[in-house]
Image (cartoon, rainbow, N blue to C red; front, side):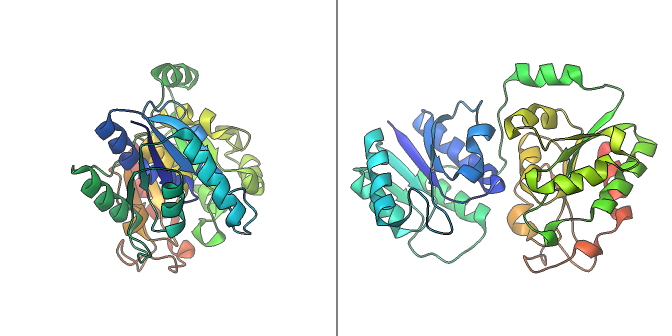
Length: 318
């Protein structure tokens, strides 16, 4: 039995959120499954040690419609690519008619798919209800990122036992989801006064100015930047961290899936959609908000106090 899962959402966080359902499909059919995902989901790095994954295929669709799988020619190109793999079964985590037709034309006889033209709803609830119905089983929403034990142990030996190790998620998909960098600098200083710590700055190429600001600050010597690391190489480091503190971003989802306590600041995104699926996520919301009231329009980055984040951090580090 050859099984394909199409997960067309773009983010790293989305990729992590769908992992319990991909793993459940693999377990049900007793075989590793192939996945079709967008490159920005970074599956090839996140899932390098995942025995539930057979092959990672890249879905090349872009906002400007210039991707290899966009348009009519891209449609038939994808049909051909999938047909050549000779899949027996497909799960489509999208209500798009396009993917249904691609599966049909690729000769896949057994198709499971979200309802066509469905309204947007909670990403976790949708995936859980759909997969549980298809597999006739109960599935935990808790994701797991698998790493080979030798990678974890080798990295652990290089990390000081006399320090706390904290991953700082300073990056974000937009400015309204980013806590001020000066707040992070002050937070690190306060934590360092209680627990000598090493801070790992989780950011990307677009965060270089923020990273440089931290490295030039009075806590710079206690920091290591991830900006020149591949995601694959950061995973064993994060796995050995005592805590993640940071914005609601892909790094938060990665940390929680690695089993790390993750203190997530939800300034402009819904906690109920992205912060309640994992037992490892601990949320902070802006003053005047509740977990239920946060949305993509909360605009609360200036309503999360340094003291609140510090107190919760110390509690989780204790």
